[in-house]
Structure formats: C-alpha cells, structure tokens
Amino acid sequence: MSKDETTTAAADAPKKSKKMLMIIVIAAVVLLGGGGAGAFFMMKGDSAEAAPVKGTVVALDDAMTINLADGHYLKLNFSLQQTADAGAESVDTSEARELAIDEYTGKTLAELSTEKGREEIKKDLTAKIVKAYTEEDKKMVMGVYYTAFVTQ
Image 1 (cartoon, rainbow, N blue to C red):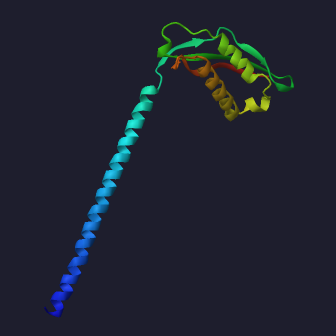
Image 2 (cartoon, helix red, strand yellow):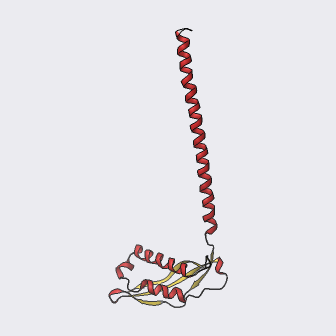
Image 3 (cartoon, helix red, strand yellow):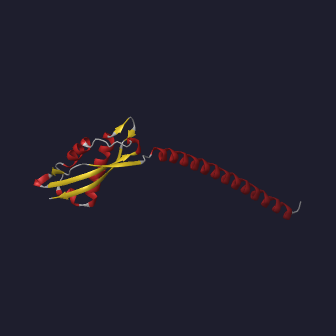
C-alpha cells in the first residue's frame, strides 16, 4: 500500500464516523422533540376542555355604598358573568354583595385611585366570588363586570 492510499483510507474513516454520529444526533432530536410536542398538545387539550363557557349576565339590583378608610366612600355596583353550567336561572347575588362589601371595606382611596389598584382588588373579588359560586366542581360564575365605581 502506498502512502497516498493509507492517507485516503484514514480520511474516509472519520467522515463515516461523523456521518453516523450526525444521524444519531438528528434522530434523537426528532424523537425528543416529537415527544415533547405530543405532551404539550395533550396537556393543552385538557385545559381547553376545562375552560367554562359564558352564560347569562346577572346584574345586581342596586349600587352599594361602602365605607373606605379615612372617611371616604365607594359607590359600587357590578354584574356577574355566569357560566353555561349555571343554566338559564340567575344565581342569587346576595353572597356576591357580601363578598364585595368585605373586600372593599377599609380600603384606602389611594388603593382604588389607580387602574392597577382597582384591577388587583377586582381580581381578588372575582376569585372569591368564583369560589363561592362553585358547586360540585362546576363553576356557576366566571367573572365580574363593574357597572358603577365612584369614590368620594
């Protein structure tokens, strides 16, 4: 064997090993990526099925006047977004009124003066109302809409 033939044979061997390594790496990436994508879509499907469907909106009859800190007041009224699971009959709003009074009583005017403050307190109120109106793992209410929000 000549010197040139030995060099060519030695050069071919690493190329074949690199090709084989590259094929193994690509196969592993495809398999892992496919498994990850499958798991993602399966989990996504479960959460999409659990999302409640909007039903009717129930308005509270009258606005409430709530005492805030430092002698200020809040005139508040809101509506409840029911889920389709609640059916055609409107939910009793008494408990929602009580939860709103408890949530807003004693808050400062500064807390309610900013959009961020109002949204944060509304988020807390909505979570409490949804929890209160959940029966046998069925959400009867899924949201709160302000219809009056006046501070003094």
